[in-house]
Length: 118
Image 1: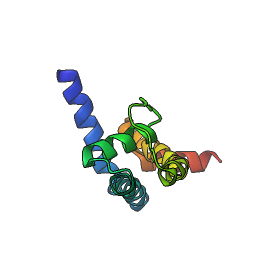
Image 2: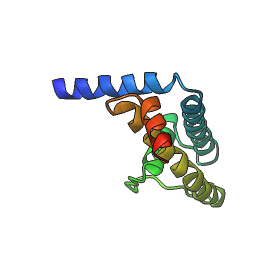
Image 3: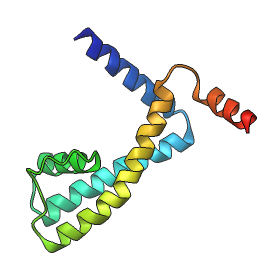
Image 4: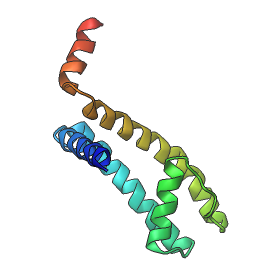
């Protein structure tokens, strides 16, 4: 249990450090926006509860895909295709940016070092 607590602290510290940068703020807002849009859509057009819609959005964007939920309407299936194409890229970029802030060292100094090597 202590290891899980340490991972959680490191995770939230990385988010806090990331939110100090405008690029990370924009990326975070984009991820939240796509999650909210997906939840709204599935609640509205598939008739799912808030929890079911959020669960489906997270499972879909992380490509876990348990298969216990799937859109039943034509519009839901079409939306899901575009939702995956857009959301997967955003989530991957967010996780990559988060990983930069979670690793030891300052992300800005790593970026500066990478620029000087080029």
